[in-house]
Each structure stands twice: as structure tokens, then as C-alpha cells.
Length: 435
Image 1 (tube, rainbow, N blue to C red):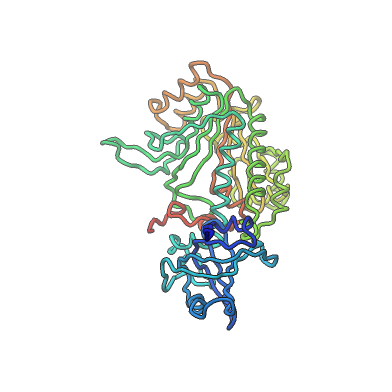
Image 2: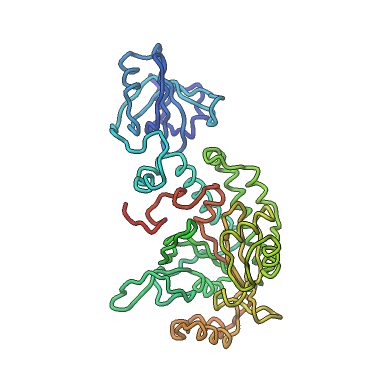
């Protein structure tokens, strides 16, 4: 009886050394000589090399291998061997090739291409090494987020994507018509998470958020994914402990699960590992201003930090650093007043080193009904739109704190990418919407 050849994925090749298998894949690149054809294959799980030896196969098969075009889909059959020369560690000695779908004039050739070109071809660029590695790491960060908060006893809530007002008082909102009434794509799930925390104790939201801001910086997106935990019976310092443990957990999971992807991106794993060491430094906004001024920065107390200031501060400590208690005037209305000062609020931004800037923003939330009502009016917001939010301070309010982490910003930090647009080539990632 003839034994059936198993069909496997590339990532499982290590389990089939010495066995003949069949793999469905795409041809990424090829090279060769008169006697050998080296096929660089991918199947969505990993990349590896299949070798066609002219002396071991029919002439027609060798000619077929030599004539394959980039991104042709095919089934390859052959024996799996160890390959200590490659980072993957395994390759295939090919005995048969079946073409599934031909490919001609594939536009992303094996040469250097500019960002703008790749941006226009992003539906195809997804197939290539850098986006493959980046999105695999993004997937790990998503799974690790659920694992972390589930282990910590949080309940996942979904906040509305259409809202009737601006939760943080901004005008940079996408407006749409909601059956004759104006509605806006949500910029945060935080206020709804506060309501959830009063019901479940610890909750988190995880969904898309939108900012109608034509930013000219590399850091800001019109659409991105935000993780926003909210915790009842919790003060700011306890929240900071959760935040740093969360970041350390995310990085640890990537180091455990994405070794090959980090190699593809040439990310310094030892440097990443150093970012898992806790606790992270805590520096007041006041001291941060002094540190910047003492190092030649032209900044005055009361301003928000830009990219150069954030980069210097995080690099100064060589790891993520919390900047505490920002000026009240530059923060959202709901942040808790400082116990001894009127000009600052109990807040914190977590800055990542290497120029990646703020990856978390958070605060303790004020619980005083009259104060929050006053702040809403001062910000020119509609009391009617926030009546439900003020109700949270009328019926059994408790100390509570929360924070938000931008997933795409975290992806760029962990992967070491220069900016978001190159790292994640999806339409939602920029202001340009063509496919």
C-alpha cells in the first residue's frame, strides 16, 4: 500500500526532517546555476528555501523550476532537510512541482523600492518580509493583551463607534449623518469604560478610534486601535504598576513567540529584553522640564512635549519612563486634581526610548460631580451630552484610574520600525484612502 504524502505548512517543517512532504506556497524569489535552482518560498506561516537539483529530477522539472515567475503559486513536494546555514534551519530537496496559479510582471521586484511606491502597492506588499514580520508581531501583541487582562480579572467591553459628542473635547472628529442627526466616529472608549468599571470593577476596551487630523508627522494616524483599561477602587500609583507590567508582558511575549520575525526586522533582542526590567523610572513633569532646560532645550513650564523632548527624556533613562502630573491646562477635563496644587493633574505619560515617544497616556479620574460639571462648562462642552457621565459621580462614585495604549505605536516600538506607514501597509494607516 502506497503511503500518502502529508501536506504541511512551512512552519512545521522541523517536525518532518527526513520525510517527503507537500507544501502549498508562493515563489518569493529564485536564483540558480546550471545545476541547481534555489526557490525562496512562503506560505503565510514562514519563509524557507526549496532546492531543485538537476541531476536528481527530470529535465522538464528542472526547466520548469528555472522558468518560474515571482509570486507564482505552486505545490512543491520533496524531502525536508536540516539547513544550519539559514536562520529558519530547514529546507526542502524538491522532487516535484505543480503550478497552481501563474504570475506575470509582479510589480514589487527584488530591488529597493521607495515608500511611496510600496504605499501604492500595499495590497501586494503584505506578502513581503517586513510587513509579514510586523503583522505577525502585531498579532502576538493582540493575543498577549487579551491574555494579560484576562489573567488580571478584567472584563472586555465594547464601546460605541458612533457617538454624539467629542469625549475629549476635540474638534478633530469625523462627522456623519445619523438619521438626520450629527454623529461622530469615536476618538476613545474611555468614558464608556468608566461606566463599565462602576459595574464590573476592572474592564478594558479594545477597538478602532478615529482622529480627523491631517497630521504631517510620522506618528499620528487617522485610524488606529486603542486598548483602554479602567479600574475601580484604584489610585494612580497602582495604575502605573499595572501599566508597566502590561508593557513588560507584551515585550516578553514577542521575544518568546516571534524570534524569526525579530530577526527579519533586525531588531536588537537584548535591547528589547532590557525594557522588560521593572520598575520603570518615574519623573515629575516639573523635573522633566528642568532636565530638558539643563540640556539645551528651549522649553517653558506649561507646554506639552514634542518628539525631540520625548526622545531625549526616554533615551536619558535608556528605558520606558513615566512623566507624572502634567499641567491641567494641557490635559483632559476628567483628570483628577492634584492634592496640593491647582495647576497640575494626577496624570502620566509613558515614553518609549529610541524615539518612539508616548505609548501610554493615563490618569486618575476626578470623582467630584460639581468640579467635573464646572470643567465641562469651562471646556465649552454640552452638559446635556455629558449628563450620563456626571451620573457616575452621583451614584456610588469611587476612586478609579485608567489609561490608553495605541496598538500601532506599540507595534512600531517593539518592531523597531521607522514609522507606522512602512510598518503596517493598510489603508486605515494614513490619510490616503485609495486601495
